[in-house]
Image (cartoon, rainbow, N blue to C red):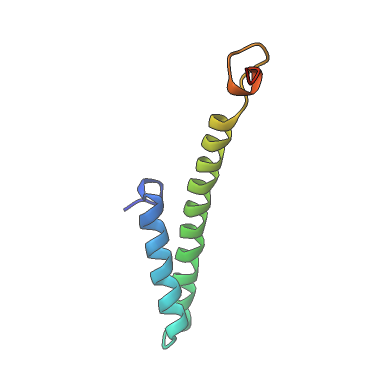
Length: 77
């Protein structure tokens, strides 16, 4: 499965598995390096998802332009 098609949850879960495998040890140097590289890619995928979520939240929470109706622009009574 291509990284760009992984959901955040899929990438996070696979990354957690990579970490568990690395922490368990018993791997060859080549296997460890391969897993480390995979983990780096998965971490980047997760970060991209999180940055996208932050941007969407920021856009949603952004105050409307001056003069637009919003609770912040209305008097309490």
